[in-house]
View: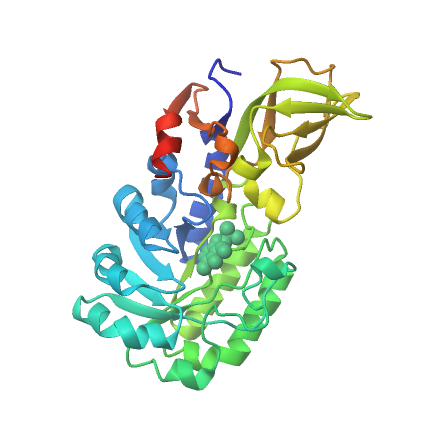
Length: 368
Ligand SMILES: Cc1ncc(COP(=O)(O)O)c(C=O)c1O
């Protein structure tokens, strides 16, 4: 505990190191390269720590691309569902590779990329995924995410040197990964062997406890040898899982048939991803005293979830909400004008330093 004013996100570097070392181990064993997916985690104050363990970044927009180029360095992949005319020149200035989502975008911007000597790729949609949630399923019906027709993909071979195939989603099951990669090999192998590189995207939860990292490494290595390609992975969640928390304080306790603790934060504003996917926050679960922990916005459903505590909660008590890094800080917003959580980093010696505090001026500057 520190005396920093809540709310704040706290990135714990000792915990982050566990993920980073697993990533470095996978890279060393397999020869695959790992790029941080900035859509998941873009808190650049942690990049100095992460940089030695990863090869670079991948992006989903011009701004993420620029951030990766400026703050992380290394290999910088540029992907966007659609580049705009007014973005492409700047994007090419930051990118080592540019991955177009469609043949149409390749046709439109490929000549510019070629003139700048930037390697090009296409997104390949294998038309299956591990996602059970249609909102996040890249293979959902009528998906706009990538090309799947082999003839169309082959027609780009004179311009592209690789493809990005993102089809895993929170997949911690190696056998499922293995089976689906075999399906990709069977369906697209004749095309893949004509390429120099393949990115398998993100969504493989290989930094999780008990994941068979050696098996994954061997599988990736075999794939690279079979097709003569350099593999890339784009871990987002796997890079930062379990390495950050949202620290909040109790502002009020209400008894409405249930004991409700209202805290100085908001799931809608500060952990929005959970609300979108109808998940509850990871709250303390040890103790005899049960509370619903709720946010301070006017949204009726601004509820983090149910927690259990060793003693009855009092106004001023601190609560630590776990797993607050992935798709969390990147989605924070100013709903209700609620104070945005500061960002703090806990160094490996236990020192906590605040790296960013947001003020009224930031709120005001986000509108006009
Ligand atoms: C193209 C691409 N790469 C990487 C990722 C990162 O996925 P994850 O955070 O599940 O590892 C995503 C997530 O949506 C993605 O769309």
